[in-house]
Amino acid sequence: MKKTAFFLGSFIFFLDQATKWWAEANSELLGGYQGLPIVEGFLKLQLISNKGIAFGLLHSVEGFWKPLLLALIAVIAVAGLIFYLFHTPEREKLAFVSYGLLLGGILGNFYDRIFKGEVTDFITLHWKDAFAWPTFNIADAAITTGVFLLLFSTFFLRSKTSADAGTLMLAAFLFTQPTAGEADLILSRVEASYRDVQSFSADFVQAFSSRGISSTENGRVLMKRPGYMRWEYVSPEKKLFIADGKKTYFYLEKEKQLMVSEFNIEESNSPLLFFLGRGDIRSRFSSSLLNGEEGVFVKLIPVNPDPEIEEMVLDIDEATSLIRRIVVRDPVGQQNEYVLTNMHKNVHISNDQFKIRVPGDVEIIEQ
Image (cartoon, rainbow, N blue to C red; front, side, top):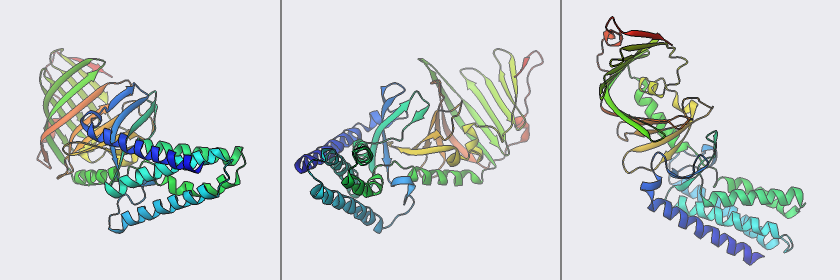
């Protein structure tokens, strides 16, 4: 059984490295906003870099000693596994399977952290868009399965050796739990870059898609604290959206309609408020990094169920920490993408820009 455990560990290690190599080689396919859906709503492949360890530990810490500490943890875990491999009775077959899975999984992620500085994750499981397990890899799956088998052996087969081996679980999980530490650090810089924003202007392109239907519009956006927004669409149709801190006004020039709604900025969940420094990104969302050719891409999942947002992706300029693009997907599969160019912070904007003026023959619809 000892040879079986070593063989299984070697197989898991090489399978893990081969699949990570394939994922990285296909970064254009897996690194986008949507990833590669395998089973719609349940399973997709999406390339994500993980530079931290479990539960966000050490995510913002840099230094020559960090890889040494990670190496020490891995060495202790592997040494402990080998010790139990040679001190476990041959009859405890399930324990040997657990050791093999743990050995291959720990070595797989350990290799990534030491030689690449980060772990490649690319498998994401969903449950009908209501739950998403953190993105993982083959090594993570092997470690989780190994730990589960050790628990089963301990509590149901009454194996004392397995119970003792359970002390290795903490070290093993340090190499399997996904972390948003690096993404959290990037988001803190984004929040800092918008913290002093009193006003904001940019050109925008908005692309909408839903079940095969898509449209693209463009125009100019103006924002001003505490909660003023003006989105002026110029093509293909002229439209105007204004928020004055108390109400929102959406004017459809072609239809001659003006829709008016109450607006409470303190209760609003609009991701566009990020530009006014009011988004509170890190407390509302769990975050992870996506691989991209240029810039930094951060994926956000609401901590609590949100009727308007299933997930978002922020495209962040690495030099300025400004958001260049926001992609918002809602729970029914609709997607809005906002691409911003010609961005300027703290420009003079008159309050008159946030007053609605429409012809007298417009139909007013209170919502």
